[in-house]
Length: 193
Image (cartoon, rainbow, N blue to C red):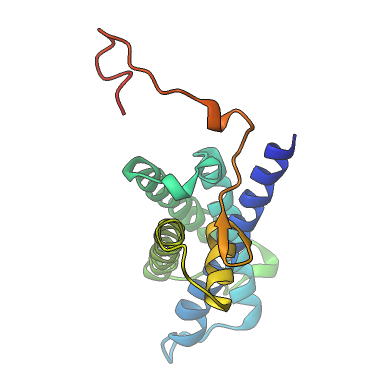
């Protein structure tokens, strides 16, 4: 029960990080760098943020991206993230192409290159934060002699519990320490890791 609650909290915090990163991508593409002949209003940016967030969350949830344990992420986890975001980009472009037909959204459609830029910038930021998470997690496990506020920040970001000047890895179950790894003769690559 406690493990499921901790897992849910991590998923929600990762979704929150992703929402902040999407906001940064929307702000950069539609707010900071629009061309002079195509200015975007605040309602247009808000509508596209909501559309992109729904599409990204839906596709990432369908691909089980938020169920990944990112401290141990490998290439298949990142490929899954890229595939989910590609599907989200196609879905987002398709939905936003219908905007001229909605009475409240006339003039809120954006060009394909902007949709592509929003999705790819968001993907770049999402991959970057996950790689940073892996780095910080590994770094805190290797350098236990860190002191000060940076140590607490790294501990918070990497999911380690900081007790005084030491980190403590919180096991996911009580049996984690008692697990014995075995290899079965004749099992091929199944038992090897």
